[in-house]
Length: 103
Length: 530
Image (cartoon, rainbow over all chains, first blue to last red; front, side, top):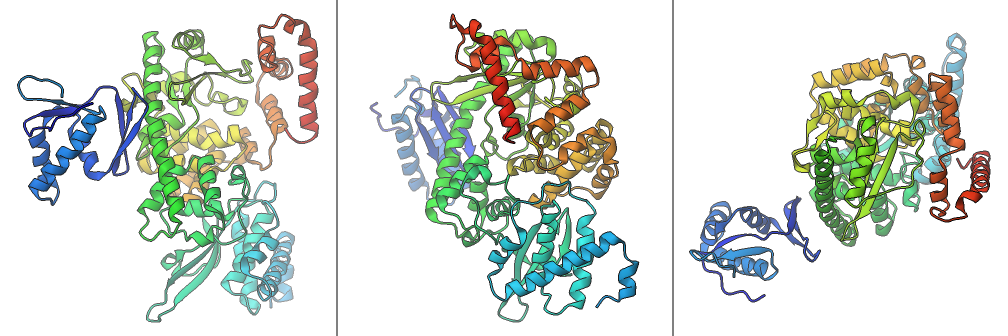
């Protein structure tokens, strides 16, 4: 799947056929489509929690900056990298503001 | 020395105990001069604890005898006393725990070590005022069996079982004290359904010295269990939904509801199946629904009195097996079978939201009662740490008033001795705190009046359970029916058991199959394998 750069204004949400659960400080995710499972560690697990409802990329970044001691620009870069990775694996849907198109 | 006149005034049993204690103290003292303590402990302890009904008053009497002699004999260190008391209690059917602990030596730079023995919730040897200051270093002792299945059925004092219990209690467990290879420990954790809890325990330990490969292995296995749990939960929700559509509202029992109600995370409580309690008249509807949604019946005996349950199973697209056991009595054993009925369980059942809108579980008091009697009524007192964890978790979540109600229920239902023993066991292995009044209420019951107490005798076999079952069935017609179900199960069951279901010649072979099955069973009983 080709994934464009995700803009801050995009809305992101977890994709459909997934099961997930807390595992200590991690979150484990199982894709029912292909049976592949993934693990997200502490901050990733928090992002996954925020992704349970459609949320703007900028809102996720703001939440993380408020909760963790992290430089906002570094946080934005790492967040976008993770979201693109998740989108490439089909674990999240990315919708552009306005047209609702899936990237 | 003990004056002769005072010795003569003692009961014969106490004189015998003094003599036995003296022999063991002397043997321990002499032995410690020539061999390491763990070698000596193995020699003094012998094999498994004696298979006899332990006398609940014995730990106190051993404490008296060992204490009295140690004050009068030279060289009776705490370790000598502990080794002697430990061996003595095991010989009389108890399962004591021998601890070796250290504490910081105050202003002195060295550590101060101490040995003591605990049994049935009390310190039997090595009792000192500052005992709580000591950090337990045990397990120390003979190497654990490499076969994981023997982990807990062997002796509770086996170092591996002791070590795992220490981790579950949140205590430090130095790697070298375990005396096993990493692969053995991984296999034992899997066999005992403790992988998740042990992984969690060592992950939280500040100074765990277990090998990196072992910790990584535990983490991988625990993560896999968490993934499998996702699929199990999905399946349980789907099955409960399907049953509810046909008016069947089972009550979840044992592992599955506990995983979702009393454990931090569901995958910390693995189990091989999901137990559901149904009303007897719902059996046909359940069979129909389970078949419709792709499940197949497991070949269990279909005896009404003998088994009181049936199982449906299937494998999902990920290769994970799902089995659902449907019970209409809580036990196959007559002494326990009618302890809790469907209506009584349903009256206190509580919702389990993570398992869907139709999930409901036995109430906490009933769940604790079931957790206490389960290992006794179905597993011949098998002391499994995961089952003690269930009791520990449930007990910790019940307020004192509910625990008092639990004790009252256990007395009223005739399982006070069984419940008292299991709570005491959880206390000694996992540090489960039980209000003294609750233990007193359970202990005050006269064991002889409870038929269920006979199930506490160590070393019971299949034939003992059959005899108890026949004895506890109230009516002769039921007794005869049970014996008929044991000797002559349904032809469908026998044909399936011999792989002849649907085979044309199968029916003609039935007499020979029954004869072969009967002779094989009899041989197992005669050889003591059943």
